[in-house]
Length: 180
Image (cartoon, rainbow, N blue to C red; front, top):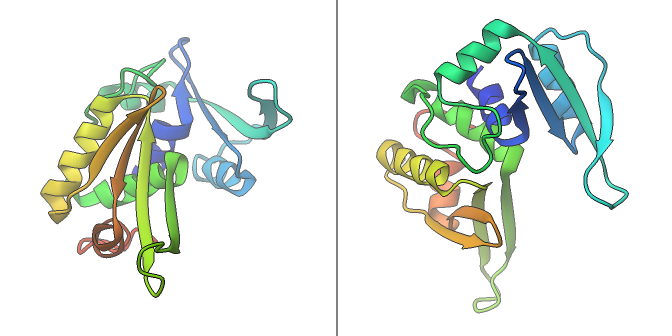
């Protein structure tokens, strides 16, 4: 469940009607997995964003109990800019983090331009809310003693972990392998 809360936190939203949870992604398989987990029989639709031709896959769940529980752990409607601390227990935080990574995160590996025989590796998390990334960074530091750094560009905050932290901590945690 913590994994799916990570997905909802990043690529989902709570509608203002008090009952619907929307999940949208470019990845059909991820939306299908989301639907199967919640045993939802609604069909997966598509929608566009902006003026481009890109289509996204979308599912909407109608579940008042789940909606209220998500509110109780800190999610809110229109959360993008206001998201902050979430009540995620430490023992499932790695699963939540993997959901966040699959939603609004990235892993990148590329040739180091300074040392050609080396690779650079970064794990990054993105959010419209700096407060949420502050909480994410503090929790990762507390649980795994990893040091990340934040940047802010054009309405988006980015939390990055460079090679050592990215390889040893965020990808392979002592508590749980979040890439299982």
